[in-house]
Length: 405
Image 1: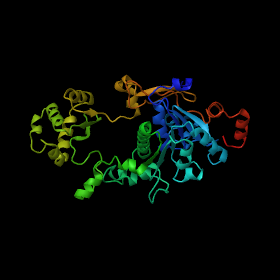
Image 2: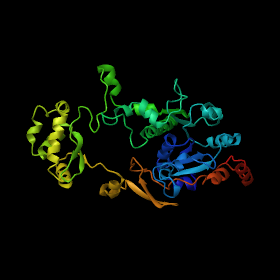
Image 3: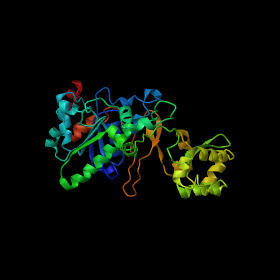
């Protein structure tokens, strides 16, 4: 029979236990995704310090991070000094009932602590170990330190992001870490599925640079076959037109994407220029790509004759995809976001309440949910060690005095 706590957790992973080790974003975001769908995620943190994300972020009201409540949501916090023998022994005890272990230390760290996969699978052969690093567990770069920004650069993303007149840009978010975490989560779920057939766990090796590389479309093949190097192109993609940001009469910006032949015909009709869809310069995808600059200028001349709202209505009525470039302010004010509860509001001990993005994707029968924001440091230590592992209160007092927990 499931425990009351397990029964209270809904979602397709509510019978899965995860031990999350490591810090910052790549490993913890993988843990967040699993926790969002019901997994019990126990996050190990250094006593007295915790994950650096507890104090990271652009804005820190009351000295508190606004990032931590999101990336640690739905998790339990266990303080544990992994550099001590007793801390390592507690991990081995937890591993007996753990399905997935997530770690994002530099390769070799877990082995130095006698917590490598070869050691842990002797305790629990069904264990799935998810390892997230900059360069993977093997190869000449494996021992290098590798943050998300380095993976973005070496995986090819930075080269194509930004305006051609400036040095390569970065995204305004930690996309490399997050991509590696998404692939790590996908790998963990595939390993769970495989375990149903084999009864055995395995290692999931998610490298940041490879997660970025996996998203790079045909850039490698373009160079290998055709000698073509895709360069930075600012707001557009090479040979994809129209798909750009256009100005309105009232000084707003609207992104219009009408690069498919049928959609471009609808755009031409909305512009009152159906002849454009028959013009050899614009009639096909390739032709529009070759004449992108002049076509974008034609469209911009038209959009500048209309205010934003009438322009949006005209495009939507004609089935032409378009959208504003939203910041958080527009997201919070958007009726579609509200109707789908894409952003939810949770109670928070320091802020009173906090709004954050909801769980994605949406499952019709076993949806995920946000049960609580990120926990306090060590909030669940006593509960886990007393009730899950059966340690005595006296031993907890000793471990705490010795800095193990």
